[in-house]
Image 1: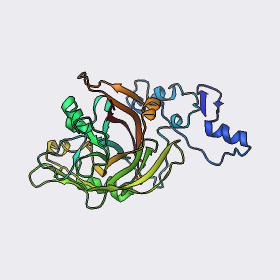
Image 2: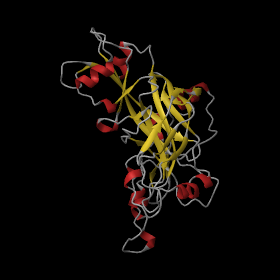
Image 3: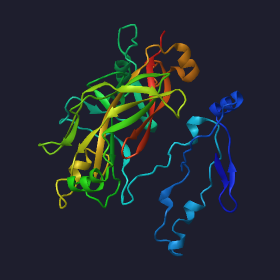
Image 4: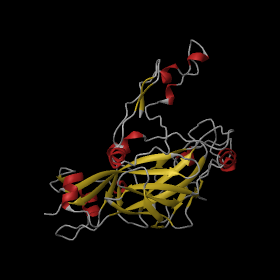
Length: 342
């Protein structure tokens, strides 16, 4: 549902999703809970220096047109409002994908870099060409940069590296600030909820213990993680065709060394300039039973992605990740790619 007009009388527009209409037809439709979101609001419009005074600081936000209601469940609320038990929180962590380069300090894994449009390429290496070459090998030879290619079910190569942290340049990224503004107020994520489209993704791989993201003795940073299949996978309650699972998290120990140092080093290896919270590392396993008709129905077939004459089939989907304690979220566009079968 949505408000059609927020300038005077409250007019509420409510429509049923496909699931709601199905339950209405069966006679067992009943509203037991609700959630609220603010997808259309840009809080960057808050102007604390408005020339007309403080009463007008949020004028642009209050005058933002409100979206009409959608019937599709997946499109209604992408950024739901959340509540926290504490009332003394000065900052809330956000979530971002870390696409930094860690070499040569790299240990065991490296962060995958998204390609055009922020899309992560997920190569299905169970498919080979006539010469026995895998999809990822052909893609890299064809023009895709290696750092942009995530290999399906890989356990020790590239990973989707996700961080939480405070996006505030007025707070130094020190261990003390991490403790004050994140750990001690219950916002450090020890686990992450991951939602994935079960039609295309068979399982999620996450850290299996001993994950480490930290400053190195050489003045850089190291990423160390071993991946394994996550546990406790179940059907998502709010997204059609999605499953959800829990991936372990660990404390991000990339710190600015002290408050007087410039932070050139740590910002080379973290997605945040402010205090860092937790991190997790993920990979995805493509379902082995995806058929050619699936690519025809849900994706694209025979695409010459690099202008070389080599063609690929691909399906676009979205991965959702949410911190268990911080409630910070991120949506990651995933493109599953395989060699076209000729």
